[in-house]
Image (cartoon, rainbow, N blue to C red):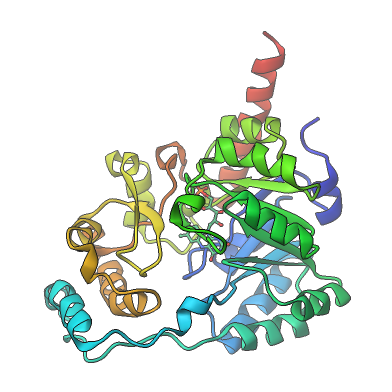
Length: 362
Ligand SMILES: Cc1cc2nc3c(=O)[nH]c(=O)nc-3n(C[C@H](O)[C@H](O)[C@H](O)COP(=O)(O)O)c2cc1C
């Protein structure tokens, strides 16, 4: 009874479950394709991909599945256009990070850097390839971009961290809204208000957004097993999006240490930190987070902090060092279960069945 509703019909799914997009290589085309093939909605987090990488990834996904999948981008925010940090701020940030670099055998950072701005070129590629679903976070793309996708038959899914954002997305005519509660792993995709406005727990946010808009709602954040799925559907969500649960799947792009950390003692200690990218996001607390957060004034704003710490985090993965990786995770990380993508999804479905049976058989 929980498996069919307006979202499953609109997106032609067997179950109202979404594997959340996870940019930075965590949601591989293989992971997304296997989720879609298994009847849920697989998503490719693509915001870091160059136009040619994006094209190759979408083509790879299409070759692996004829079912519905989503491609996700970050909408640029005005604060990304800020000037590079002044020399005192830069020296402060270096003092904090160069020690990590030398520990990992990396040369000292030279000058503030930022990743190339990709959004417009990425949108051009996606308009040409017309994926079944275009999902986005950190804002609302222009009306022109949204109507160009609509004209190509691509469904639109926006992400809201509060009710004002959900109303803005509904007004823009999206097909579904991800209600992203503060329990979620990864960045807080805030675009209206201040950080506290993006820190509403999933249990509160989902019914608030369901009452505020008539567009289907996809609950996300801290939902890592079938009990959470049943609860979110009961709160009024039409579908549930899970990120951390799928990091634990063998086909995710996460490091082996990251997958193991989620389900170990470290999984109980998540933290919202600007340490990795300059934007707040939830991750496991490790040495990199602790040492950078000890002096928050020396954390650069996005995108400069992201560029500054990226080589450290990559080298830490290569060296299998959990203390210096970005171990993104939601608050329910220890509930994740390792296995193949299909096993992860199948267990979630069975647990949801059990949760509903338990409720109705009492
Ligand atoms: C490593 C990681 C990367 C993420 N990247 C994105 C992204 O690029 N775009 C996006 O809309 N959501 C992103 N998310 C959010 C997920 O899609 C999902 O909504 C979230 O993980 C749900 O919370 P949970 O981790 O507690 O399941 C990311 C989450 C994680 C853990």
